[in-house]
Length: 386
Image (cartoon, rainbow, N blue to C red; front, side):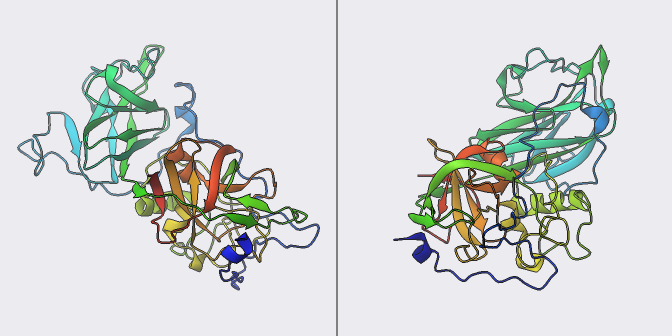
């Protein structure tokens, strides 16, 4: 069956909101709103002494809804919380801390980065997850502070699973894990101070990842429609304004962006160090403009959206489920289509925001498989293909 039949979904009409960043099908069509996709990949672990000075403390993230140790040193229904440890059992968890107020450090280096001096004071979290899933943690530092994130399978530096200057992530099994925010030491001086930490856990949905077969007509493809499912480069796209972000809409690439990050985290449950900005003004009247009105764009869908350079006639209805899968693995993300068109370079098969790439462990223009989900009832977000 051809994709035109499979995509017998209502053609999305533009909503009169001043946002009309759609492509045209005629020759010389204008590029989509993010014609060449983002250029920033996943934020790399920078040299430990060159990033903190540029980071300012962001506004407070989600309130602390994790279980703190009770007065008797125990959390409800759990083993006693060790002295000097914060115990977390609900997600996303977030709080403000200050490593300069902690005792002298006892965890001085980690197997994940054995040559990095982490001998400054640390803040320790015991994290209990209810099932197998995806655990991540992220920090925002005050100016002049350099603390790093570590995920451990035991409270032992040799048990380091992942670490980063701003965030860390790991596939985990049900039970106890440890997140340690440790202070980097530069030239013998601990870079300790205030920071905000977020810890998140997501249990991916599990089941088939079947995709429809057919063709996807794309703008300026000269009739050479893309066979679907398709495997190829997927760019890292910018963020888009959602229905819970009312006018006035962003007037710069970073206007109101911190609030958007916090909103997305609260809906998706995904904790990460977000760096991408709003979609540029190409074809739209404000930053972060997609197709039609933001009032039609749920927050959850924006956190897991996907685009292609489909023609307006072939573009799926808003919210259509597609699947992004890491080739050769069972790792995938169920993504929402129909809200944006792009990237304009047909050598890329599509684009998705940094959340999808973070979970998949990929970067800008990584090779992924993309197709329309056979089961349109799939929940958005991480999925384990079975």
